[in-house]
Image 1 (cartoon, rainbow, N blue to C red):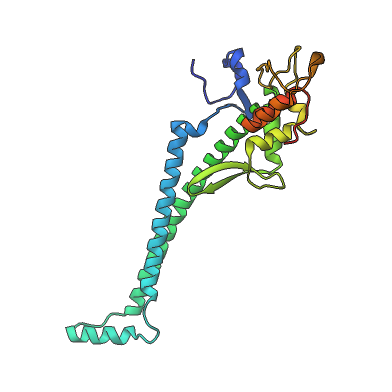
Image 2 (spheres, rainbow, N blue to C red; image 1 turned 90 degrees about the vertical axis):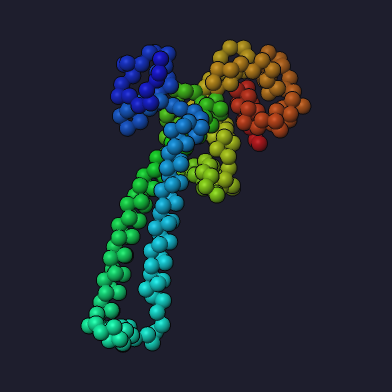
Length: 263
């Protein structure tokens, strides 16, 4: 069964799939991971790039037109030049200054209107793309950090409100980063994992159930080197190995065992 991306009510959705939606602005929106690889998102990014290219081309044309009109020397007498030329041809001399002024006004009006239209379209596409990337990135990072799915919408809203999550565009590549006060390009996964281990984020983390430590998404860590339940001793060697190989997973395992990560 295909799941709709946006619905008005969860009544039409089977119970087992309702947790995959989050409420937003009176609607229920499907939580989607990996949206950047979706053909629709790729097409949206391609359209945005094309609009930006068209905008640059129009801007260049307008600059070139203004340069041609403004490139005449200061002592150039257009009227005298046109008079001599038309007299040589036996014609009545036109008012060259008025004609040039009218042409310049027409060009400026035409290109200004086209540029405004393209800028509006580009801004709309850009806003949509950025909103989707931030939502998808936050959802994935929160789930990786062990946040309870029940609290996922509230956690996302809180982190967005803090204003530390941003998109950075380098050489046509857009990436999601966070400003943690020390590094303004902290990977989102690291930022969210650190937040989940602090007092503000701990209430959102899924509770550990059973005798063994579990991850926030329900996965059981049968060999958790931070687990000290039932008289177990922490495995410091295994801890360092996990931190080096996968810092995000290491944070999640430590938090699941009740240890606050300090890396």
